[in-house]
Structure formats: structure tokens, C-alpha cells
Image (cartoon, rainbow, N blue to C red; front, side, top):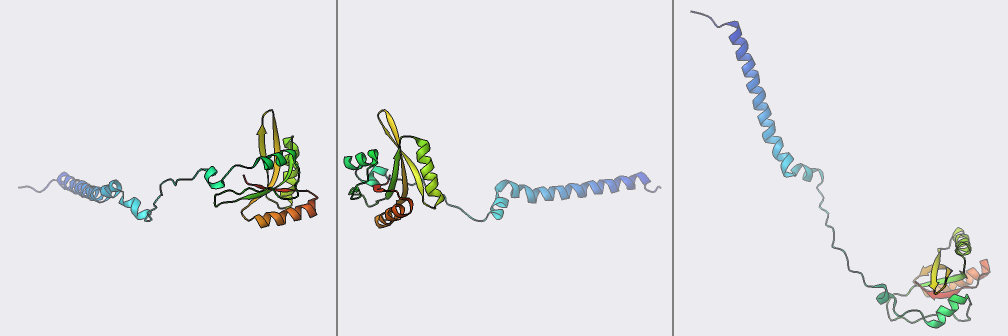
Length: 172
């Protein structure tokens, strides 16, 4: 009778290796595919849940700032005239912001030079552009501040250190 042919043993061994490889591959697929598809791997890497709130509703600035600037204050700022008393308004809103206007120029470059000079000395200066029919004026202001007394104190400091007469105005 016969014995097994050497090629039969070789085929049995190759078949066993292929079957073992197929079982291992199937096991890996059974374990890894659900992990990849359900997103649980993502959840384990990023466990924190972040709630992004809906966009808040903002009140219009006219509601927050109250009434528009008075005609007297507008005339003073256009002509760069310092008044004996600071020009104020009494808005009915709960937020009041103040700025110190230290100059008004017809040329933007001149306003920027003063603004840069004040910024170099540590003051939060900016240029406010006012458009009127036929011309623009560039007003240099320092601020804004919510506390009127701080702006009044700043007005005295600027007069002493820079020799600039300023007027307290409402911001914006």
C-alpha cells in the first residue's frame, strides 16, 4: 500500500498556513472594522464634549449709547474749540463711555502723527474720522473710558505734559 507522497505533506502544510492566515485576517477584520466604522476610536481619543452656544443676540449700539451727540458738542469738535466745561450728554442707556479729544485735523497724516506720538507715550490714542458734506476731519482721541473721572484726570495730565487742551466727548 503506499505511503503519503511528499508533495501531499507539502500541500497539507501550505493549506494549513493559508487557513491560519485567513482565520487571523478574519479575526482582525471582525475586531477592527466596527472600531473604524462606529467612531468609538474617535471618542476614545477625544473624550471631551464641547457645547457650542447659539449666536447671542446683540442690542443695537443706538440702544446702548442712548441719544445722539448734541449739536453744541458736534460744533465744538468740528472747530476744535476747547470749552470751559466739558461737553456731556445725558443718555438714558446704562453704558456711558468717554474719550478725550485732543485734536482735529483736515489732513489724515497730521492726525496720525499726533496719534503715534501719544501712543509712544503709552496713551490709547486713535483717529476718528468725521465726514461732513464736502470734507472730512480727522479727530485724535484718547480712550475710551467708562469712568468719567478718569478722563477728567487724563485731561489735566495731557495739558500738563503735552500742552494740549482736550475736550471730553462721548464715545463713540
